[in-house]
Amino acid sequence: MAAAGGALSAVSAGPAAASVKGYSEPGERFIDVPGGRVWAKVTGSGPGVPLLVLHGGPGAGHDYLEPLAALADDRPVIFYDQLGCGRSDIPDDSSLWTIDRFLAELEAVRRALGLRRVHLYGHSSGGWLAIEYLAGRPRGVASAVLASTSASAAEYSAGTRHLRTRLPKAVQETLDRYEAREDYTATEYQAAVQVFYDNFFYRQSPPPELLLRGLENLQNSHVYPAMWGPNEFVATGSLRNWDRVPALRKISTPVLLTRGHYDEFDVRCTNTLQRHLPNAERADFAASAHFAMLEEQKAYVSRLRSFLRRLEK
Image 1: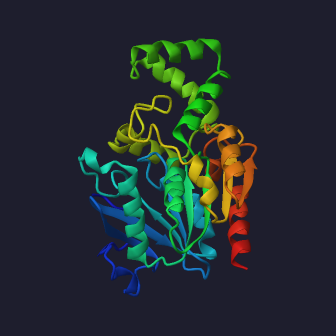
Image 2 (image 1 turned 90 degrees about the vertical axis):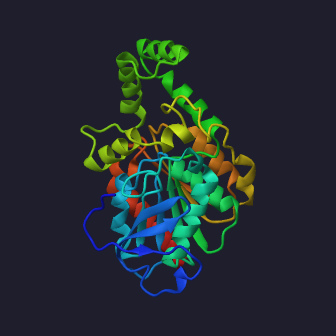
């Protein structure tokens, strides 16, 4: 397993870990979790409540979310690569790729770093993980940011189907034709998928290296096809029937919802979250698609900063 520079140490995720001084100090380390070890990085040591970041994919790794490290002057910002991608262990064991195991992994990371009180940030499928975690009413979660996400897989899929109707007719027909054959690797099909991505995934060119690393993680991932499917449009994995809309009203945690105007998570996904979460506010970013933290970085970080500071007054 390759890791970027910095001292690395393996730490236990057992119950005693939270009492060991220094685990939350800035730096990189590995943490034992169910199924292997995950790489984690604590950035900054500001006095505010730490922000724990959950990346999407599933299996994309943390890299594209690194702009959130700008908040580290206020508080520790904690990134980790979920098992199966990035700098973490990549076991070849299909039984590991379930949302319950990822919940146990999240709890193990909290314990290992002594995060008794924390803000939770979840982007895309990381938002699904955050919602699932919040539905269990965990202790010590001061707030959550649910970024470019939804409360159900079905609503997300319906949204991408709607957004496809905005593409040129020839592109739509190409997508439909190859999907009817279940041929997702043909060059013509991949080109049509890229048209969708250019409109609703990331709209600037060229994409930054941070995002390219995340896409490379996905291409090499066992996690994404096992939990979702061959691409964004085709859900065959363990998350295909995921639905937490009924649980939203029981989540009293303060929540900030963020999305890009051109997001692949259609606006109705965010509307559902806002309608059902009892303590939610919202920020839309007019020039962004799925990665507002990259596409409108300054405005995005500023909005998160004000939300977190206000809650801590």
